[in-house]
Length: 231
Image 1 (cartoon, rainbow, N blue to C red):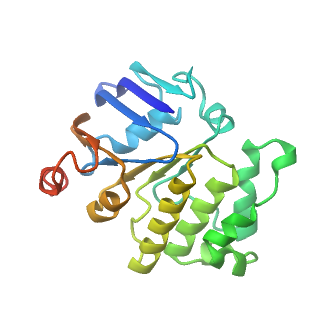
Image 2: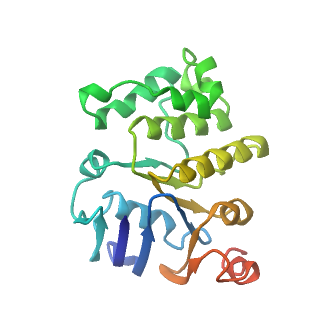
Image 3: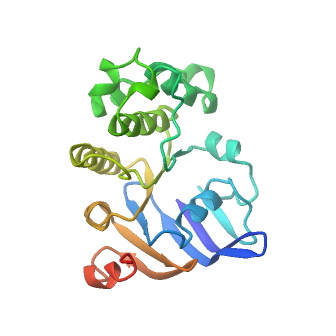
């Protein structure tokens, strides 16, 4: 289980997070919602060791990982699908997938067949350069690259951004399938309410760096949540 406890985070004199709590457990999707600039990506950076926290702690599988480097988080089974995908445009699809090997012991450095079962288009495009793929295909590649690491915690930062509806639907089905397997905790950051609400087991809504709503899906009405998403 992932447990984020009373986390504060600063960028210089600017405070991005103010006492945020969050939990994620295997077999469930925890969605973090909020407008632009409310601290969603900062929360992910704290969870993944990409930016130091000012106060509070991050506990993963019973161990305090608050002050570990990001590569140490990766070696402990955490994987991220970053906002904007961040694939390597000049590498082939296969080479992009193999970059996930860095966090794995040598015996596990192969691409699992399940990735091609989840995203058949990646098998068809193994030799194509990442930069030649459509935005939706690049997002599938970014998720596949994260899954290569066999994560026990999968963090996705706005995976629907700039993606066509048919691919959004497929990504939603993949996230739901990964959750059903029960061996992976999933944290999903989103602004697209309908997509997030359909997948969420638990919701955390941020406003100005604070969690203003939290709980299981259904504990708060759609209207109550949407008021923190509209501009």
